[in-house]
Length: 195
Image (cartoon, rainbow, N blue to C red; front, top):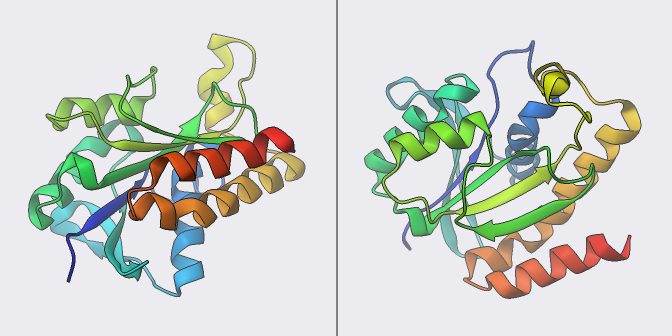
């Protein structure tokens, strides 16, 4: 079997948070698991819910931290250490305030941009040069309104746009797994720019 590729979605566990904007990373993993017909199971010692599948011939692990968002790094580090995953084989999907609703962007490396989940990952991972899938949720317009905004549910039209953007991101995932990041980025970003 080929080297394991880890795909992490960031979010908060529990039904109270399931439909909130801050859980867009979980939405991505749920959609990916559903399309591959796999289910998540809790691995308590890793503090994560995981599912394993093969995509494009690549052995992939999906992981949703069972910790809260601001402690995501503990779970991600535990999964990486247990399975021997390097930062080069890590993709982290998360909600992004600085992108419009319905926009997704792929990138490698960069800062945490104030995102509490990424900030915690930075504290627990020595190498920050991992892939990111930034899922646009829009910005409420005021810094003071951010917490309530990310922890609330989008309206029906916004949710539809976010979920469509997630489906489009899943379509380019085979290129990501095959090391064709430039092609994946071009296909994903061009599609969105045209819409």
